[in-house]
Image 1: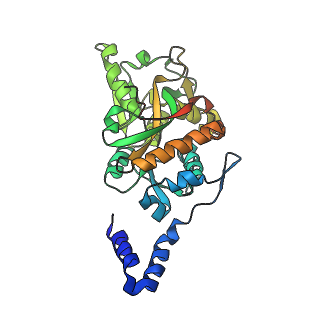
Image 2: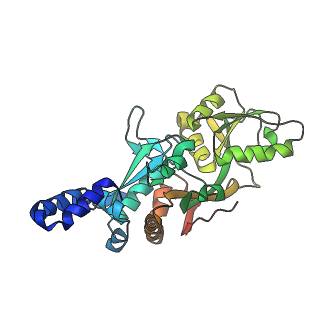
Image 3: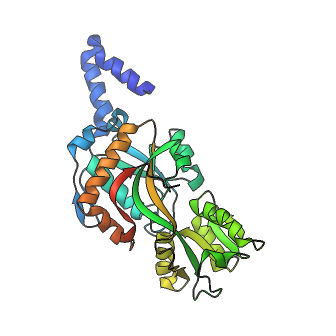
Length: 311
């Protein structure tokens, strides 16, 4: 409990200053007014009081779940337009839907990808939503509520001039990937299949930086989540900049695994509430409608699982 809450509790219990204490208690709870209904993907979502009341006391007091996200990473996280600070994307929309269901606000703040989990550990955020792969290493320090299942895809220049069709075709070539991601591990693990003709793996701090390298011809391909690769191929320069490689041996992407909402291990009640709220969104059909808006309905899960890593 932080010092502000301790002072508040003491004040509320002190009979000698009852009136001022009551006023102080009311003031401390003012920020906890439940968030109103939200319309997401054309669906109006209202608070479930039982889920709201099951939230941790600190979340009830603040009325907010602080969420870290690495932006941009379409279709999961994007800005509404260039130069804007207003966010959109699959994760952002899902966060607003979960917030409305839980009766609190999900506030998103940009954070570098490799700093997402450490920021939760440091107490700067309660959660992270950023197409994070649920794996056992991360589970050591955070819990996951899994909301999609997808693998890695290959993004190449328009027309696929190098005729890349599989991961094996990347051997001996320069490949771009974002640092500290599951896609980097995929490439590193595949090096053994390249024999003496290893890939030249180029890491970048942001996904958008890797795409710039692909545009300029510094690399022959970028490896990223397949939903993101498909979105970029569809939307960049109105579909004229990149192509998505479709490998028939991996229709859902390479090493398909769960993506999860990372939640602080110090807040198990928040994890449980998010999991139950997500299941309601699944059962009501809202989750697939959100994903449909971004052309990735196929990655939606049927069950809201916890820590369902497959590694």
